[in-house]
Image: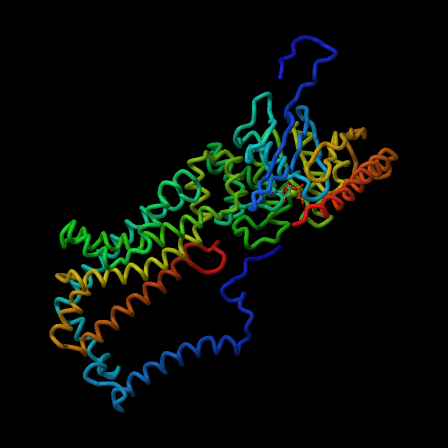
Length: 269
Length: 279
Ligand SMILES: Nc1ncnc2c1ncn2[C@@H]1O[C@H](COP(=O)(O)OP(=O)(O)OP(=O)(O)O)[C@@H](O)[C@H]1O
Ligand SMILES: [Mg+2]
């Protein structure tokens, strides 16, 4: 009888040497970049006042966390991001899935997407502020708008491309047309939806920061801008590293979480 | 169809599945229209085992999809118990040519799916599912996901999933095509047994003439695309049938030869038509 094998390890065609280099190469790349960053300002390739050596930046990070206004700002950003991202999923996934399964829904919604697709998100920030003021509505709204399109498009393609025999099987096993959307179309399209969400995470963090840099007042983007205004360039770098690391960890956590929650999924998101 | 009361010589025998003038035209991406099925009439009496054989690509799967209510015919129609087929329904179970299991559900989850839709309590679902998994010769795989099974195992799970809901009419599209000879023989016998016990009406598509003869009451031979009914061949072999004994019977040899002859002729005409297509 066949037994379950662990695909994460066994699918790789590389031998032990391959596995070793797979571990070491990224490490070497990162070390190389950091080394260059350390070296360039010291030997005068870069202006040390604007681009300080990496070691001088890194030692500032603990101080950043000690600043009593830093974490509340991070919290405000994280809250707005989570709210905007969650709302975008709640709106975007059903919308896209419906478009993928109903020509009527597609004909109704697609023109809106086609028109809004090339509009720069940054331009929308100002329009939202004019409309709703500079409060949380605009800040959350811009995140929703920022990642809605990749979510809708990936859900649409996912729902449209499902194996029709899965849907037919469910229908012949007694599932109604509407219920099949939830029971079959959604899980069958999930791999593609999740790739869209991964893209949307990156986009939404970008729009979050862009909005905070423009609107100021609160959030980690605003905090960053204040540092820049005060000429604290070392801290600007430290804060940027923290943000970049947070984004990276979020992405890693996302991929890990999916692998863990959805063991039936083929391939990667 | 007219309701027949009383005794009448012309009265049609009771019909479970009736296909009348079923035609299906597909439009290619270039806008060219080509018929896949061209006016198929087919009857299956209640409890009858009907096989469909025909050249590859002639429209057998498409025909089953129309009976299943998944695909709409361009013309003609299908009735089941006298009611026109307009949508899929749980009284018509289907086993597809490739397993079509839900990849997000375990083997057990796949087989209990239809039972859950029927509203069976959880422990009943499990008990019934286990029984059918046993029947298709699968043990110890309940917790695995479809991607962890071989093709033949997946197909057996799909068969169990469909049988478990006990549909009146079974539509089977080359269900044993991906199995090894031994499993195939076991499942043929199982299916024959289920059919004898339950009185299901079965439409069974196969490429194996041998399989069709062993299982069927009648065999429809479809022509090359576009499919028409080329011949309807009654299998006048006594039941219950014993696989090994049947192969020895002179009737078997005659049927086998006749059907092969029909199929070989079709394969040839298919090739001639294929050249004229200009893809
Ligand atoms: N959705 C579709 N769009 C266009 N053409 C189709 C479609 N589905 C099937 N066809 C065409 O219709 C014909 C019949 O296909 P079908 O799958 O019913 O054949 P089949 O008899 O089941 O073949 P096989 O024995 O190989 O399974 C084929 O030529 C196929 O290319
Ligand atoms: Mg087929």
